[in-house]
Amino acid sequence: MSDRPIILGIVGDSAAGKTTLTKGIAQFLGPENVTVICTDDYHRYDRKQRAELGITALHPDCNYLDIMQQHLSQLRTGQPILKPIYNHTTGTFDAPEYIKPNKFVVAEGLLGYSTRGARNAYDVKVYLAPPEELRTQWKVKRDTQKRGYTEAQVRAEMVKREADSEAYIRPQRQWADLVVSFYPASDNGSESNGHLNVRLVLRPNIPHPDLTPVVSANGMNNDSAIRLGLDRDMGKPVDVLEIDGHATSDQVTKLERFICDKIPSLIDACDRETHPELGRVTGTTGETLQSYPLALTQLLIVYDMLKATQLH
Image (tube, rainbow, N blue to C red; front, side):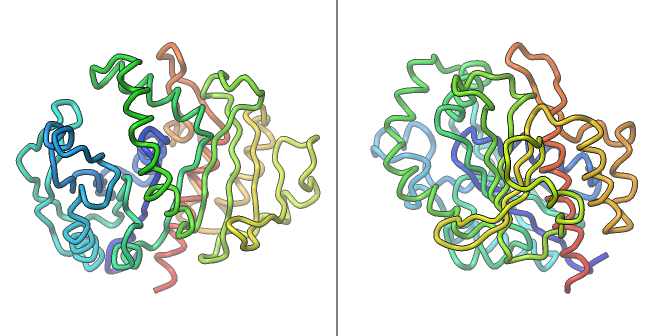
């Protein structure tokens, strides 16, 4: 194990699925080994002040990015930080929290890759890019059920934020090592979260596992539930792995075991009884579902994190 924390960044727009992805990764690695922080805690203004100033939480000027960058650098070297806490329920700030990094640090939020200094702190960088229609569904559901908004308020806020999303959030995709896009298999966009497909852009910035021995025969055709191919993302060549929500247990297990065999500490990851939290999502009516695409996405990210411990 490395003598400094391994830092994973998960960046995406509001309600893109950052917390769901983070939860499974942290549970898999062991809560005692993982420190999770939210970079949205570095907001400069509370909700009332933002409304008065006419600025959204997505704008860099609304965040203490210099302090966020400094804290990420400190965590990378194993130093503790005194982190601010933004309360999403009240829209105000709670007392700051003393944070001591564990073996792994997961930093998720809106603007985590917005400065070069912050980007340099991460070992693995993930960007979440679901279709906007799906993200809207997720945001409406979350903000009405957990944050006390009406659907009309949520949709109005998204319209207000769109310009800043376009200007400041989506461009961060270019810095990611892995771009994750969950999407519905059909055109109606209303499928259960447990049956969403995923498209993973694997950039060659870091050594992802070579999956060609188990996936290459399928090619990028529509007949297989797991497909690997070459594409371009933001003008650069990338590998693309697609996993359908209807992939069978046998297909998924084969790929999982191949990934697990690459790193000794991952061997027990393929035991579903040991790690039932991988791929666990909440359905549209609150039921718990198992998503194979999500489980494989989380496993690939864990692989990249463990690989990073061997490279320095």
